[in-house]
Length: 149
Image (cartoon, rainbow, N blue to C red; front, side, top):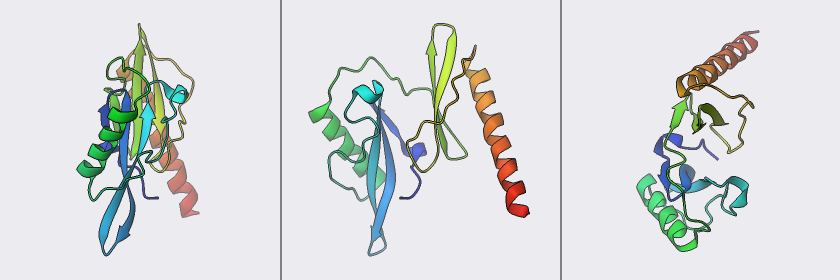
């Protein structure tokens, strides 16, 4: 699988639709998608890959397919846009959540929906994003140093 196209993700009715290039046929890209759910593992569609079983010819087409599937099969009434504070940094997806005066985050690498966030609380969204960027920048430096040896 190619990397997840977080920059083309769409928040819809409590889900985050994340397109990716599934493959190619006759030099045309075939798109699929994965889902994150605002209720997490309580949803059968959390981290599901293409539960509709239909593929698309472009990003907007696959997002429409995912929306139709959600409209027909959603298991809950969403509470609002849980994914509104999402950022892409070095092809990583960062989702910031705020409860009261505390911030925390989910962090997904480019190739899979595996949350690698540290269990840490922050006072602000800015503090949270700064901490994540420092960590990702530090990892990048270590990787380059190792590759040069």
